Length: 147
Image 1 (cartoon, helix red, strand yellow):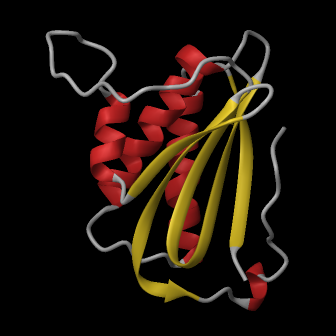
Image 2 (cartoon, one colour):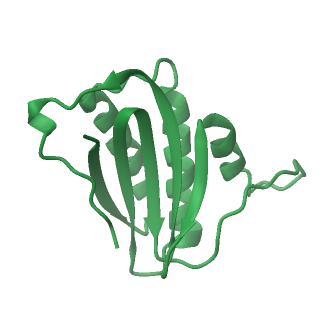
């Protein structure tokens, strides 16, 4: 049975470090072993949360960060209600922005965008070293949906 936890964050710059802390604390609490890739997770959460704040969340709205662990897979999802579909920039030009999703795609084991009406979910996944078996303390945690 997969474990899931989610939290909403306002459209504010301080939501990025809060989302990052939420993700890493959840990883540790659940005992997800992703070897030496905690910095990769940290950077990826920062990138997708920053994109949500800067480009995806309309004024006065929030984004939702959902974490799911199912066996050997740890999945991170950021859902917002903004328009557009994020694209990975393949060229490495002189731009100072637009490289975040390229980093995410390179660091994560899987990555994608699911379009909704309204909004979208940017998701990424990391493979764990060992399968996560939910403890009795987490047995009531199930996957919810932020809308």
